[in-house]
Image 1 (tube, rainbow, N blue to C red):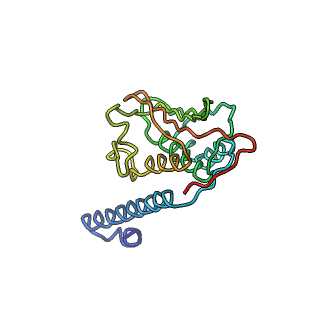
Image 2: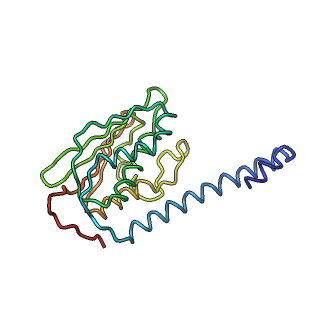
Length: 208
């Protein structure tokens, strides 16, 4: 379909061209959804060895991967330390944070420049990490629904498959933690997840 649009777009009728573009867009959307579904399935099944992971290099890696998006959106990202160690599966932790950061950079308003702030908070047995944005916010009645697969509250405006936050929740749960959100429409969102503190000489375990 993409080749059809590219090579013959100039000679197609307006109706035929619209149909070809629609086929192309739908196929790309389906491909993205299948990739996300496979990722969600792998999270549910793969074995995870939990080890001591420092949050700072994980945050730095995610911000480096999203450098282009941050630049294009003229966003400001703040990530003050200190960054403690958590008991986690590093690839999964990176994926969780990447989804939360991507959402913070996507669900923005047009009346103010996007600002995202990340920080960690020590609790008695856990480390809670926060991802705060100044975007569109989420109504209280929808804040539990957003973690369900295929739930897209603003799908007509913002692209996506509706699986990202389901991956976040499943990934955090597989690492022995929990996730949540504090938000208000028009005033941004604060997503958080908690993981256990990593202690010296602590025995790692495998998550079945």
